[in-house]
Image 1: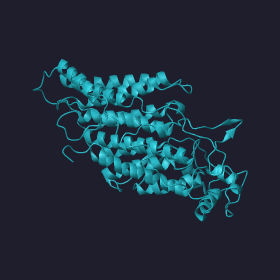
Image 2: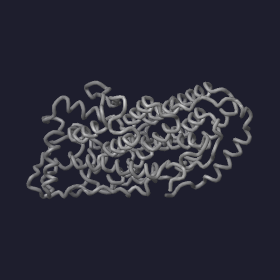
Image 3: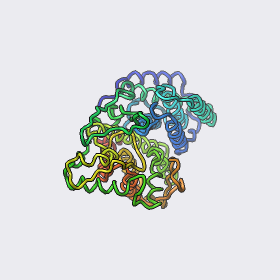
Image 4: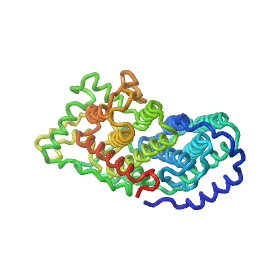
Length: 448
């Protein structure tokens, strides 16, 4: 993979910083902060901050997940750099003494990456909340540092946090974020076209996401999904007619509960699955190092799943149900009947194949299974929906990871967003990316 372009320079910089700060007080008791409280605190703040960025400026789901990967990777490197080397770093090769403050390192790495991502986000849409987000970040960072005793250990933690942030931000320079659109319009049957309202097409706010350089996998097309079903096939007709019947905005066979669930899952997967991770970190008393490693793998693999999924979307450019069902007489399949008035319960401004939500759910759940099993210890866990107007409770409880994944395949059909095989393919893509990431990221030192 192409990365680690300037690690040697970063290593020299932080080495000089640590030397300048000195090691006085080396005989004092080590600082507190080996628990995961600060890791979880900044993970939650990162999700809240990045999710508040306007979609075209980097807050839309795939870009949101990519940014979470950047933050989480920097936090992992900062924590991993402290004390004996147990796991391989991501980009930061620097080491700090075992008594350096983990809490200071976490807060510093997260703050500086978040501050840079919010400050530098291009204003492709109005961003009146930018100043407020930056102010909240600064206030929270000051609070984090104020809670740590002012010793050389604190200063060492700050130094390594700075180094981790700088290394990650430098590594992501020129990675393809905010590049050109990957969409090549086509009016041929089987190709996606945006919904047009009052003459204005609803276009993808982040059409560049599929060409971003991945974090862990080799390329955006490494795990290319199998293609959609042939338009003349019986499979295509069956999936077309399934979503036509139950996914329509009006006159659907959906129950009220199914409609609620379809709307409930409009919440960004980044919010859902990081919330679950924080719950399980607290429940199992994971320490800072293991928690940072979990969240980094989860969010960098999540970023790669988003990148890969968006690469799929524009590679296949497959039509959404609202395209296909209105033009059902153009697919040369006698089992599909057009309905020119058909509209979906929920719409999305990018091509169909594969399901972006299920790519995300598949990758996050796969990583969480690696750490906690399918049936997490301690029983149920909760997910809070950040979607609006879903018509029911925001918080729902689940017993296993299989449970929401099974529901999600149906939920996206109930919404009229996807065909069944696009949902299944999305979860498979997520699992493949997670497995590859776990094999190649943060391996124990000494493993071949």
